[in-house]
Length: 477
Image 1 (cartoon, rainbow, N blue to C red):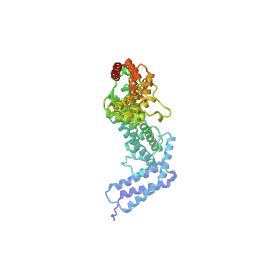
Image 2 (image 1 turned 135 degrees about the vertical axis):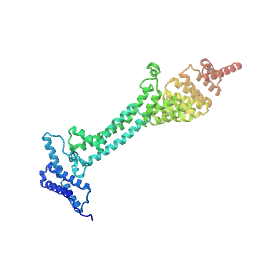
Image 3 (image 1 turned 90 degrees about the vertical axis):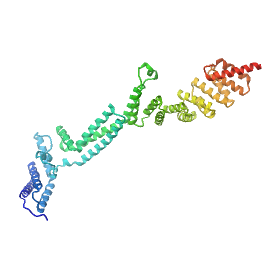
C-alpha cells in the first residue's frame, strides 16, 4: 500500500477539475465553449500536478481522478455538439470559416503533447477515411515502384522521368496528408485556405488519395500504349517509320541510328514484354548486326505474338546458317498446303523464293520427297508466271532425277509459260532420253542450245550435255 501523503497542489487541481465537470454536466444543452475550455485546462492542471512527482500520490486520489475522467468521457458527445454549434455561430458572424477543434486550443495553450481529453473531437478520430487513404496510398506506391523499375531499367529518359515523377509527387502529397504530422499540417493549411468544412477534411484527403491512385492505375495500364510509342520512336531512329524502302535509300536523307533504335525497342519490351512488334524489330537489328542467337530468340517471341513475317525470317535465317531442318520447320508454320485452307491463298514472293531455295537444297541432297512437297505446294499457290516457271522447272528436275514419266508433262507446262528459256528444254530433253525417245530428245537439246545462257551455271552445264548429245547423234547419223 502506498503511503497517503497530503498533496495540496494535486488536491486543489482535482477540486477545480471536479467543479468544472459539475458545471459542464449542469449546463447540458446550454454548454458553451467557456465550459469546455475550463474543464480541459483543469484536467491539464491535474496532469501537471501528477507529473511533478515530488510526492507519491495516494490510491484514493488516483481513483478519484479516474472517476472524474469517466464523467468527462461520458460528456464527449455533448462537447462535440457544442463545438459544432459554436462553429456555425462564428460562421454566421462572419468570423473564421472553420470549425473549432479542441486540438487548436491545445496548440494555443502550448501543451507539450496531445492528451486524450483534447482528442474528444471525432474529426481527429475518423479512422475509416484514414484507413482507406492508407490503402490507396499503399497501392499507389506499389504501382509506382513497378513503373519506376520499368522506366529506369537501362537508364532513365525524359518520358520515363515525367511518367514517374508526377504520380510519385502526388502520392507523396496524399501519403503525407494521410499519414505524417507535417503532411497533415500542410494539408490542413491548404484545406483551411480553401475554406473547406473541417468535418470533411479526412474525406477530402481520402478522395485525393483515391484520385492519385486512379492516375497511377491509369499510367500503369497505359504502359502497353507507351511501349507502342517507343516502337514508333525506334522506327524513326531506324529510318523505318511509315516510309518505304525507296525513300529509306536516300531520298529522305535518313541515317539509321541502330543503337538508339535498339534501346527504344528494348524499352518497349521492358514496359510490355509481350510487344511482338518490338521483338520483331529487335530481331531485324540483331540479324543485321550478325548477332544471330539474339535475332532467333526475338523472332521466336514475335512469331508467338502473331507476327507472321517472323516465321519467314526465322526460316530464312536458319537457311542462311545451313540448318535446313529448322528452316523447313519454321517455313511450314506459315506456308501450308492449299487444301488446309479452304479459301485458298497465294504464297508471298518472299516465301516462294525461300521455298525454291529450300527445294533446290533438298534436290542437291537427293532428299526428293521433301523437295516435291515444297514444289507442289508452290506450284498450286502462285499465279506469278516467272515464279511458276521456276517451280515447275525444279519439280520437273526432281522427277528427272527419279526417272519419272511425270517429268515430261511438268516440263511441258513450264515451256508453255515461257518458250524462250532454256532450262525446261534442257531438262525435258533428258526426260525424253530416259524414255528412249531420241527424236524428242534431239529437238529439245537443240532448243536448249538455242536459248541457253552460259552465265547460268545450270544452263552452262546442260549446254555441254546438249553439245555432246548432238555431236554423238551427228556421228551416228
